[in-house]
Length: 460
Ligand SMILES: *Cc1c(COP(=O)(O)O)cnc(C)c1O
Image (cartoon, rainbow, N blue to C red; front, side, top):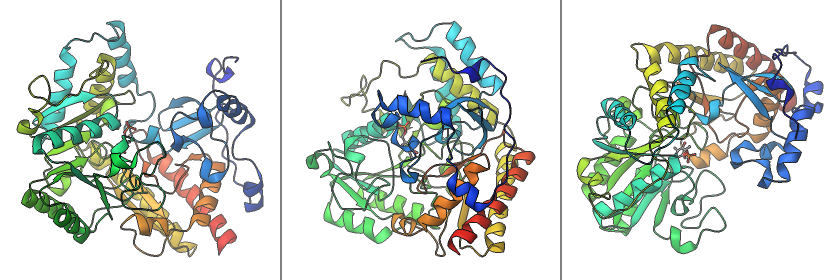
């Protein structure tokens, strides 16, 4: 395949054209070069993607092929420029190719890519994380969020000597077998795997309950008396769209877990260092026994972590009998990227400044929806947000699934046509970075107004 020309030539920003609804609906969203690259990818990579969420399956279209990122923007193979609200699904707290992060990666790479022996940077990163999240008394670095949750559950089972785990419908914790139950897709069916290839026996010990439903958790504790090892939850749900916990919900889960001798695991892979310095636990004041991190703490490279109570983490080999390992765990280049990413956020007022800017975007979206008479729910926590085309409050996976799919599709297409890169599914959260400034706020507010006018015209 020829090398993409866009890499060796200056990138011309594509002026954002405003268009009438007929035009936007009929024009392919994806440029010819992206479409060609995607059809080539499909000949060698299943579905043309290395992670299903990247496919535009819901929309029946081809995804953009991205060749470059700069700050708040990505540039696709057709040299079209998009304002990025996906940000690699969370890691890029400072936008694309931040010079400090890139320099840290360069410097680390020049010293060697991997050693398979302890390196000083691992301890520096672990200490920085612990200073931000004191509940992580001991922590292990791994390479992906999936590894973090999988390992946290193993050590929870080891420490409690129990087997059952509780998760929430629509909660996604990576793709480990026993977690693919009602995981943010399909209809929630108790103890039925979401994925083919997962034996029913592997999920028999996983109980899934609706988000924000305490009574359902109590029923599971009653049913599996003294055999619940842990409850794992995204303290803010970000994989069924963006859904906030009801006031008091997380504190009540804490109390239930304590009463029943089960561990509470906060999966902060998405919320960690994104909704606040540390994570949502610092905001809600609820202390989990174990925490999982990923995304922002790797700065765009593969780094993740899990950790918590020292007595629980002491079950891990070589101290204890619970095995977990990784050739590239704590990789020095990934650690350098993560450290640089976190240090950029470790400044007074960082989260306040950028959250306030995002709040302008959310209010603008809500006001535009009101102006056009469209029922919309939008919410934010720190530098993470989401929206549903729904008249009712969205509190769990069922209410998230009731949002208006047609309106969402029209909105997505209209926004993409205006150069805004949004998650290609209504069941994903949206992101924000420190590279998104006042100009990007203005750009978005104008795009919302046009796109919502199209939604109104198409659906009433
Ligand atoms: C992304 C995510 C994961 C999985 O992380 P990977 O690095 O993709 O394996 C787990 N939990 C949550 C909450 C996530 O958002």
